[in-house]
Amino acid sequence: MSSAAQTYARNSQTTASPREIEAQALLKAARQLQDVVENWSGAGSRLTSAIMFNRKLWSIFMSDAINDENPLAVEIRQNIANIGIFVMKQTVEIQTNPAPEKLKSLIDINCNLAAGLSGRA
Picture (cartoon, helix red, strand yellow):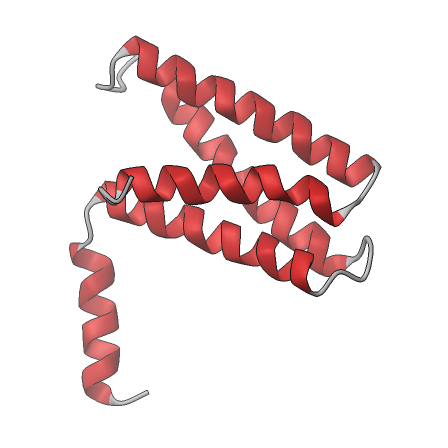
C-alpha cells in the first residue's frame, strides 16, 4: 500500500463517527458470515471464526445497551438487547447444528442495521 493510501486509511479510521464504526463492524461480520455461506464446507475454523467475531460484536452492543449511562432511549436500547438475544440464540443453534441457511438471518440483521447506522435504510 502506498504511503498516501496508508495515511488516508489511518485518518479515515480516526475521523469516523461511532455510528460509522459500528456500521463498518457489522458489515465486516456480515462479510465473514457470507463468505462462509458461499464457501460452505461444514463446521470448521472459518465458521467458528466468523460466528465468534459476530458474537463478540453483539456482546459489545448488548453490554452498551444495558448500560444505564447510555444516552439512547430505553425503547431503542431494549430493541438492541432483544436483537442481541436473538443473535446469541441463533449462534448457539448454528454451533449445535451447522447449516449455511441458518447464517442468513445473522447476515440480514447485520446488513440492515449497518444500512440504518449509515443513513442508507
